[in-house]
Length: 164
Ligand SMILES: CC(C)(COP(=O)(O)OP(=O)(O)OC[C@H]1O[C@@H](n2cnc3c(N)ncnc32)[C@H](O)[C@@H]1OP(=O)(O)O)[C@@H](O)C(=O)NCCC(=O)NCCS
Image 1 (cartoon, rainbow, N blue to C red):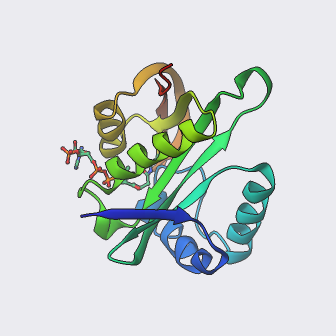
Image 2: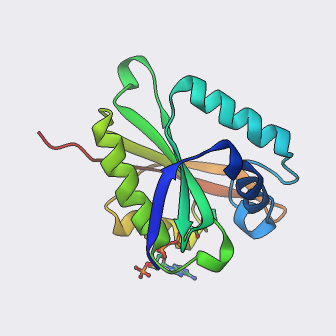
């Protein structure tokens, strides 16, 4: 599947909101459905104000998900925290890998030198995607995320994306 990317537009928010309200998509995310459209709109406004790049992922012209780069501050301003969610029908077709490659390319353009993320250890699809892309495990938050009535370990992963 070939993916395309563009900055999130207001008209994308209904579909983006639908995707994060899918229990399987949201399973390992911090947010818990139901997420109102108003919350998604606020998220859009806040990230716009903060200058955090947020991209819509398109496959065959349809919205397949989105990813965000949350820029850090001060002595960490070279770091961006990566977040992604893709609609279930598009899983396992390389869309996540293409989104990561694009995130790295766009991140470098605005001076991002390192990507960081947190991922629930049992989210094998995500961990595998990040490892294949060159992320390494930098730490583990024990019993950090509540999933399926249990407290699960969450990995901190990072990748240096800058070369002089
Ligand atoms: C995690 C997510 C972004 C991955 O995106 P994706 O488009 O499915 O990823 P890709 O197809 O590019 O790569 C998935 C890789 O996972 C691996 N994989 C596929 N199915 C798998 C499975 N059932 N179990 C373990 N690993 C699996 C493969 O290594 C695959 O790479 P390959 O096809 O090149 O061999 C996507 O599934 C998603 O949005 N999930 C819901 C939200 C989420 O969990 N976000 C991440 C939070 S940190």
